[in-house]
Length: 281
Image (cartoon, rainbow, N blue to C red):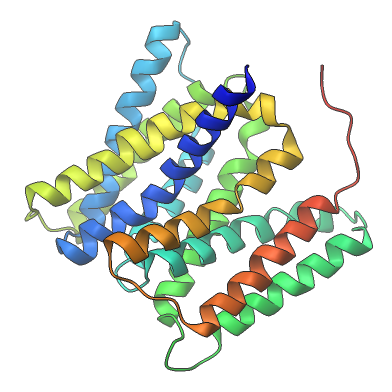
């Protein structure tokens, strides 16, 4: 892929990932949409787009219920967390929970981390503790717990990816299956009333930011390589925070700034401290 096109598609993908936080916050905070309905519309519209992309490629749907369970945990906890969190804080907590959870399997297998990764892990944890310490600028505890649960769910979802030969087809199957428990959550907890703008935000989050966003990501991922792909994702919380400043009139506190430096800097050390691996030709 030509470099200018790769850069453009990568930036579009990162903007799509960040847009999920902003669109959810717009729907829930500005339009007072029910989070259960947002989750349902996001997953069903995302499933539709992914299925259409698979049909265009004549690719059979993949996925399983294990991946669907991890996806619904992520999507539901993500939506309910944004009832109280700002876009920037939510994206930062989500990203930290995902990246730190991804370290759990190697540690449980008894693998030893290089010193740079240990330093990065401790720095990221310190930044997370600073963010969550009680105080006037601390995020809502329930919202923070829900967003970290969403991050763990997304990490579990990501770790299942190697089980499938076609990531796009696997996502299509997972989104379709996850729509069923999302409908059940909506029937139990949701409310029907929603403004046209809120419905539009939810559909954009599912069809564009999730469905097309993931399709673009799987297109650029082989070109970027593992380390660079993980590194560029450091921009997602920053893009979400910047969008929150512009469209949601959110503000940053000194605590959030310092914790962001600790979390993102620590995760960068974890990523760059990985031992080199031979790329598959």
